[in-house]
Length: 117
Image 1 (tube, rainbow, N blue to C red):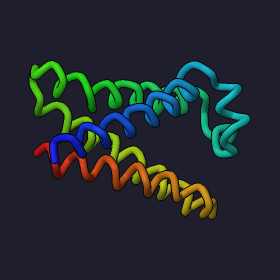
Image 2: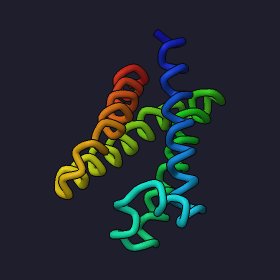
Image 3: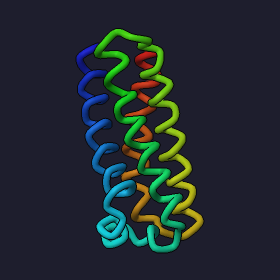
Image 4: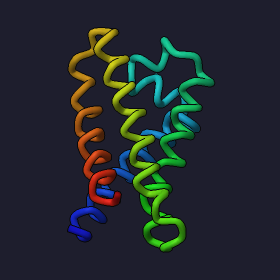
């Protein structure tokens, strides 16, 4: 189970680092990649990106360094909330094809929450 959790944590962290980096530091590229970005204030997009980056590091570092490992499931809970709210945002905008990514990352983060608590 521990190995499965580490694999999922790594995959989720990579996904959130990629997504967070685009949102926080490459706004134009994010705008070209995701249609919703142009309809949301740039500062809010950057805020989401920074939250995803911090959360991604929270998925790995506390557990790996054995320093306050309780922060790993807390980070996963925060990221699960972010992707759940993102899915609701896509539903409200009738962007149903974009919800799949949210569902995948919600499942990954929920698995981490359950496995690490």
